[in-house]
Length: 109
Image (cartoon, rainbow, N blue to C red; front, side):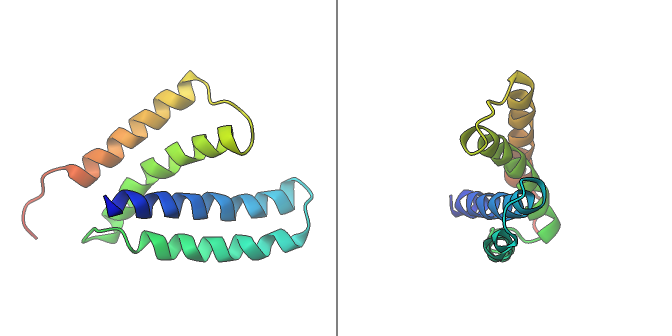
C-alpha cells in the first residue's frame, strides 16, 4: 500500500514541477514559477526512491504507468480538459502494465 502512496506522491510532484516550467515557458508566467518547480522535481526524485522495489529500473517502469494515468487526471482537474475515451483506455492499459510489473511473480533474488 505504501508503494502506491509513494507513486502518487512522485507523480504529483513530477507533474506539478514540470508544469511550473511549462507555465513559465509556454504560458508566459514569471520565471519565479521555476522555484517551486525545482523543489517539486527534487521531491519527485526523493519520493520515487521510497518505492519498495529491489531494482530501480523496475520501480521506474511501473511508475511510467502511474505517471501516464496521473497526467490524465492533471489534464482534467487542473487544465480543465476532459480526457476522451482513448485517453482513458490508454491510461487503463498503462495502469494494468504497472500492476503486472509490480505484482508479477518473481524468482527469489
